Image 1 (cartoon, rainbow, N blue to C red):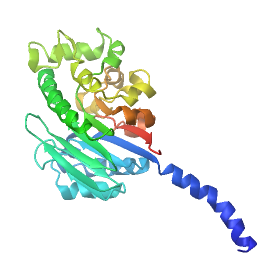
Image 2 (tube, rainbow, N blue to C red):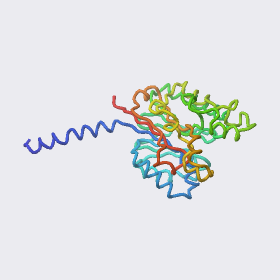
Image 3 (cartoon, helix red, strand yellow):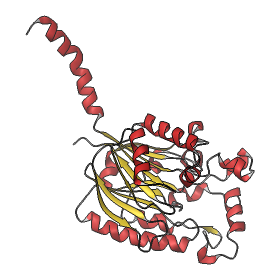
Length: 301
């Protein structure tokens, strides 16, 4: 071996090793895309979301509100951010979907007893439940959480790596002290849920924490809670795009921020998490009424 070859080996070896180490990072994103980009009419917003997800270089993406979607359309999205594999729950109503860099095994389409439904998929040795819980009734969400927790009991028998992610439409007890009982969010909810009882979103005029508590008790862990503080960092809804739609000022919109989108993970994955966040900054203000959530894991060893 001549000196020139030795020189290039010494130069390139650190870069190669760094590249291999980087590949051990595994990034997950969940995103509610708001009515399937107006039921397929808003291609400009769809392209912007595709571009944003592509810049994040995720390994897997979970999507909610895939309205007017077909498997072929979801595949187009997946390819736009470098994923060759995708699964769609259904082609009617409010569907969920899942895309991955790696082959996906569809375990189950969970529809019975569910309002929107859920997907159970496996990729890269990790079990995923992609969910979108009932938006209008805490009682229905509790029923759905019971169904999904039973699914998790079966998953846990054979796997230590599992994730439940999506739009839970529910609030975490970890955030309870962040919601002002007299603030704009609860004032608005009390008005809109008046006399709805169990068919509404409030329990005794307060937020319901039972659904998220059910998942935490599995146990599942909440990486975003660990890596963030306050609703300005954790808030996943409403996106600022709703300001014009609802004729609300930005100040009012921001004052009623809440966290209802989550990535919740198994104890083993929780130990390997290195970062998690809600992407509610300017780059996502007008892309959806929800903000995306991400979590990154170091899966080496």
